[in-house]
Image (cartoon, rainbow, N blue to C red; front, side, top):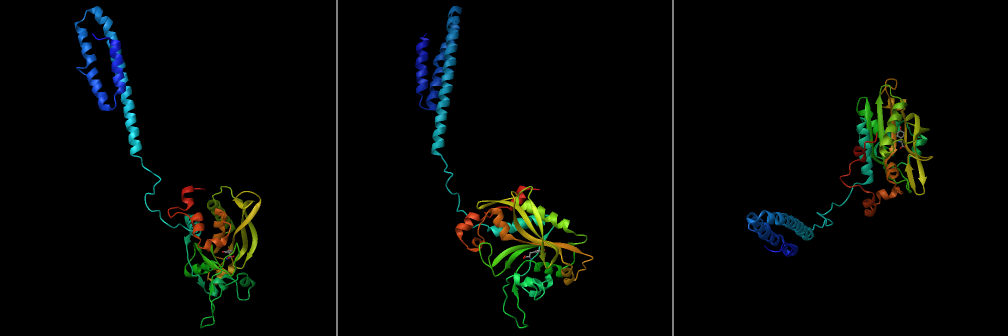
Length: 358
Ligand code: DAH
């Protein structure tokens, strides 16, 4: 019988030297296969004396175990090398664009309208609309702003040329005329919001001749200021995504509401930044109040029977606050770099539906 030590060294060398899995398999068959060298030697044990068997048997077994382990280790090494080679050669460059990226995005004003609409429709409001070119009656008179009323001057109105009847239409100065149109077109109860464009002859960092408002109107029986307050607080909490937002109702005056208030939210000015819901500063976000009895009468409703509240809010303004946009004029400058920076991707949902801030 061969010298087992020499044989082991020789076979281990060959196993180590196997260049691929096929070569390794060949060595395995030639060694431990049915007619392999070591298998044949084990078979020879049968013809040996018990003493020889006792001496050789365990040594052959150890040899077999050692070889099996060496083959398994070599197989693993070869398989790993093969895998690494494949990983290298089949590498996918995931930095390559898969398809041309869509151009364009959602303007922050559109996004803000979507978010505001989502919050109020969830509360049961529906969306109403009115024309941008409005009659004096809806924009002013029916809202309890008669001719010669000083509030008309406050609005810096754009007037259109007189028509054949000597009447001048206006670019609506607020979304409040949609209240009148809604109430004249239907029967109470009413629960609407009206987002849209509004116009005033004014321009600086916080005013543009065209801007956006959202109007809200709720008319029903037994409505009081508590309903208004809840509604606005709930809106502010959800829109600004701040759980315990500070809100202040400041007495104010609007011809179409009595009592009237302006709503401020708590904030902190930190250098150029504003943190909503913290600190000791206040920012005005809307005007509101209980619909004036004279407005109710103007649309043919009995104020003893029905009451309601209304508010009007600057959409550009709350967009600036929510996303920290410093200059209002940039909203309408059509600067692609600005739109890329502040715009939303087309698939962005209004953040509220995914957020669930309650
Ligand atoms: N129309 C007012 C404005 O543009 C805002 C406003 C205040 C609307 C109070 C309302 C309201 O509906 O009740 O300044």
